[in-house]
Image 1 (tube, rainbow, N blue to C red):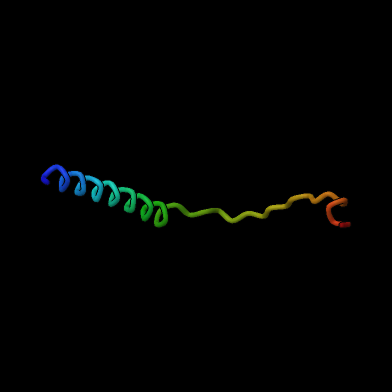
Image 2 (cartoon, rainbow, N blue to C red):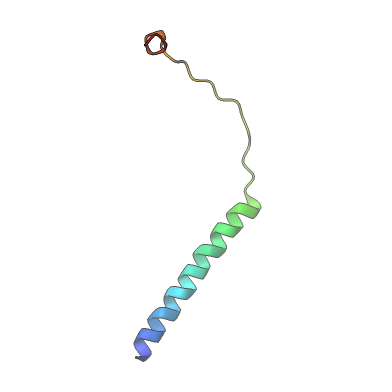
Amino acid sequence: MPTLIRFLIGLGVLAGIVYAGMIALVMFVDPQPREMTQTIPAARLNK
């Protein structure tokens, strides 16, 4: 049983680190908005 608890605690710590990394990305990374243009072939528009 102690190895199961140690395993579950390890998974919990790992999940916490991943969650903290996602929060850090949301807080510190600011996406830059930009315009996007894409050419659509005329054959595709005339269906």
